[in-house]
Length: 188
Image (cartoon, rainbow, N blue to C red; front, side):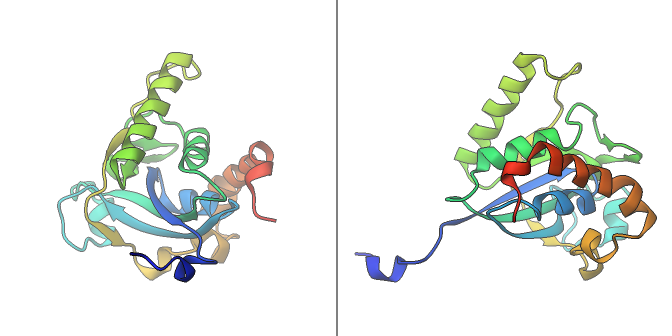
C-alpha cells in the first residue's frame, strides 16, 4: 500500500510531445505557459538511433523536430496545451511551416498514452468539423516512439538568441500572438 504522506506536496507532472515546425518556435511558445515546468527540444518519429541535427535536417531520418513538454497537470491540462498547439501553427500544411519545409517540420502529436491519443484525435475531429480551417488538418497523431534530446545549442534557443534574425522575424511574432491570444495561460 502506498504511503500517502510521501505524496504530500508533490504535483502530478505529465509529459506531452509536439511537432509544429521548427522546435525553436515550439519551445518559445510552450516555455511561457503557466504550469509548464520544462520544455526540451528533440527528435522523434524516425528510424535513426541518436540522430544529429544534420541527419534530421536532411529529411531522410524520418524524425520530426519536436518539443517534450513537462507540465503540472493540476495547473494546465493536456487539452489546454492542445489548444495552444492548434492555434500557434498551421496544422493544414503537410510537412511545412512557413519557409521551413520537409518531413522534419511536420505537424505531429506524439501521445504518451492512449488517453492523450484519444483526446488529440477527438480535438482534431472537432476542429475539422467546425470548419475553422479552410483545408483539412494533416496533423499526425501517433504513439511516441524513441525520443532523442537535441544538441545543447538548440535548448532554450529563443531566450538565448532573441536578437538573431530568425528569432526577431519568425519566433517573436509567434510569441507576440501567444501573449495576445492566451494572456490568461501565461506565467506571471
